Length: 627
Image (cartoon, rainbow, N blue to C red):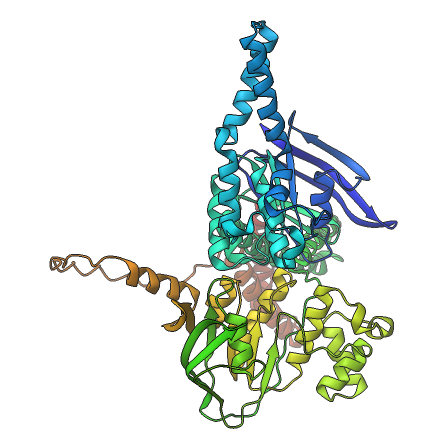
């Protein structure tokens, strides 16, 4: 049975249409991904489902008694609670069920055994068992640990945690209440890869319907069973995992393109027919008129196919990543020897590594292992308490940090861009337009009032225009939609300079990195390849040695593949070729008759050729109409 059904949902924002006609069905254990560009209405739809925002049209139907939990990016309002108390506040239903069970047990011990009491007791017991029985609190604590919290954190007040930690606490609260419908808005934000993998396993196992918004492609591959795409006010539902949806979109585009091509060819054929017989005998002229009606129908079909192509290939505004061609640096870009990386006197790791010109390197490790601190120490933004680090000759660094400390907040967006890049006003305005800061008013907005997403976009614009040959990027995909992440991925793959990348986006790491530096046991270890190669090699190193395999028998050589046969023309194409030959023959005979209309043999040949051409045209019409 469906947990929730949405039918023709409509939502307006300040009088403007956000989306209309959105329909979907989500059953228990479905994991529906909401896809689409930023601003399409994904978060709004989640809040509508949670009852926090009104609906302006359509109908929502929930299974009776559905318990809903929403996790989004808003911080908790009540900061005086401890982490444990905040997480438990999402399980009020379970706490109430425990109280009901105690009350009913006392009533039954006093002799109440009427059917209503027994039924309520059975229902309360089933509810608690669904959440894991009386051990549900331990499961909630396990969720907090799975999301990176230690036991010592459980009794700390919320106001002592960072924004990222509060986001993780919100996710634990949503998971811990054993909901029937779990709504997750960017659940992978502020999680390291170990936390994300734990969340993937949890979402695959829980007995609930899940609707989620995420831009982490690897996470979507692992979790989703259906996709609802929102874009340009409309929706498309696809019952299948996310990667199948991507293939389906490509297949639909291919089919629509083929249909448009086929209809176009048919229109050309019919137009040739009409041109030949428009002024012929009355019978053929009537046929030509009928073909004109057919052409009108085909033109409508062609317009429909072209509309679907437009729909499938439409692109929302996305970031314009085009890096400048950087100057050539020395061979060694950065080199560290026994570099001690510390925070507040606590050593995080000791690093020895070298990165050479043109390398694209990923830096990975769990949250708190020292990735950002290593970057800042390497770049001289933090003091080190041992070892050495050296930036190579001719290296020009552009650093994209999580904190956006490189933004000058004293003026407008345009002034910040000009001051950081040295671009003239028209060039700076063009740069900002590519990063979605369009129009004079938007570019005059003070940097100090920008949102988190706007700050990330501005900082990326400055990196793009820097002309640096060494890009040091710390979580560059935060607040970027999926299309913009893919655009960044393509640009980094093509960037001819050197890249050092920290990211929790495993798809980005796998596509861009040629080598991976992993923080392990307070040191650095180098692995060849991107994320998938790193995971495979790490698993090989951790696995016990296998016994020596027996020599395999030689396999028989497979038979040679048959050579592909040349494509045969269709019957319609063969007839068209014959028509072209006979038209040429008729034209040549008419040219000869123009010189001598008394030649009996030429007249007879012309009559035969014209009759054969008429037969071929009639045959063509019959075959065409039969298709």
